Length: 440
Image (cartoon, rainbow, N blue to C red; front, side, top):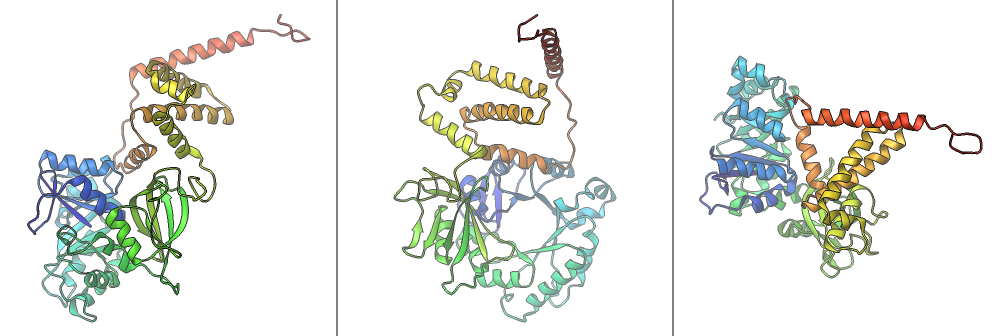
């Protein structure tokens, strides 16, 4: 799906619609896992909206950057890919600057008016194939592509075959408005990119998923793996086309029960789910729901997961959040949450101790301490582990290396710590023990 932004609001590219709230629109369109964001102007509010989407963790492909420096800056900020006009790579200076980042750029160009020929498009693909891993081809109209054997459907298949020779993926856009068009384009081997139809109501976001699921079951159900935002498996359920459509409409955990039919998880127990993503597996015969689990958990035995007990970093953050919302008398966590200076001092203390640790188990134990106190700081500030992971994921997408300079005060503090550690070790080694365990 494509999300068009103008003046910080969601808009249609061609159709006239009332500007939409970017937060809610990105939640809906981002359900399929990846989102093309098109900046239609260079206003501050537009780029702030792009940043807000990026912070949610939705992988975005960005179109509408104005300069190469901006393109690299956006990649460094965590954008998955940047879409640029194919002619950009005609400039040798451009090739020098960004030619080595092949997997991070998409070349966009207009399809030729000649429907029965792929000569022009093939030349474009071959020209940019050294520098991009994908192309985005815009057609004036895709009408007729759904007709088997039509010139346009044959052209798309030929384009896909040609692009494969250069290990380039083809994306197609241009007035896609029906499910039949989506299916036909996908069948040709290229990927459809949908724009206005999703905000004008001609297509639903679920129609980018439901028509492409396969099943060999007699009851036409789809195996559905439910995971949380850290991708911990919560349980195994079943879906059908109606339940997936309803789940994506309501952005909730809704499935198909073989006993009860449509099943909105947690309506009676309070253990509801906020739906974040619906992803098909590589064979398109299984579905993964990524959810934010509310209440006790997913399992009917009042456990977080149907597989085993809750544990790990996710369990830690859920426990800390519970302490914050439901304080327990005598709780060390609650004491830390209420005493900022104590919490900060413990964080500094544990950071010092992990530096001094040498043995494997000692390092692991000190790392656990650092993680605990850092997690308390996060919980106090309303930061979830998913928020932390989003930062890590965005940083992993940097294309230019950071200098990694150390702040002077940190170097001074480290030296002071080492001196104290050495002094402590010297004092310990100076203590002699006599037989029987008495100090000398």
